[in-house]
Amino acid sequence: LKLGVLASGSGSNFEAIAQAIENKELNAVIQVLIYNIPDAKVKERADRWNIPTVFLNHRDYKKREDLDTAIVDILKEYQVEWVIMAGWMRIVTEVLVNAFPNHVINIHPSILPSFKGIHAIEQALQAKVKVTGCTVHLVSVEVDSGLILMQAVVPILSDDTPETLHARIQVQEHRIFPQAIVLAAKLII
Ligand code: GRF
Image 1 (tube, rainbow, N blue to C red):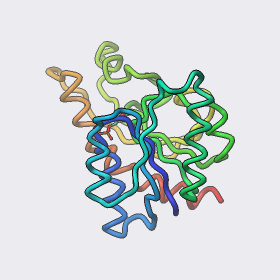
Image 2 (image 1 turned 45 degrees about the horizontal axis):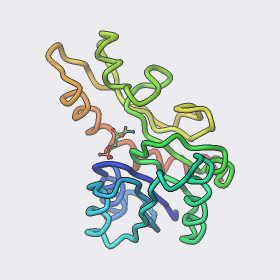
Image 3 (image 1 turned 180 degrees about the vertical axis):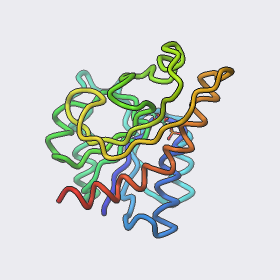
């Protein structure tokens, strides 16, 4: 599988995918990392794995569609088949989704359809639910929707902060994200 990863942050999910490939748990190659925050830690991680990187500043694009057009061009140039959104903190449009139909995968830190959007962890704490988790799903134009590939659940403890809860969720993200990519490749041709 030829993967293109989109990421904005620390890149711990990027790292988990690269490691799963190295361990031969996932038969894939990361063709390129596209990132949009200049000093994002994910860039250093990609350099360490010798994976090509491209920086795109979303502020250079007037419309979301224009940014996505630039992303699609790069992904095609690198012959990407599967688009992996690993902490990509931008809303994507039909420009990206339609360029890779059923081949865009996202990870979200909640048990969807609960707690969509960027404050999923805080919302789970506020709601006082006893469990939350993470979801890997195909991306459709509607935010945090699309076919669910895998989910994992974690407990919420009484003394949790957003940070401690996020750390617990991330352990599960790193476990299920590579597995969900394997599953997607089996389900979707
Ligand atoms: C993850 O928790 C993911 O669920 C959310 O953004 C975070 C990215 O973390 N969408 P990292 O950059 O992979 O460490």
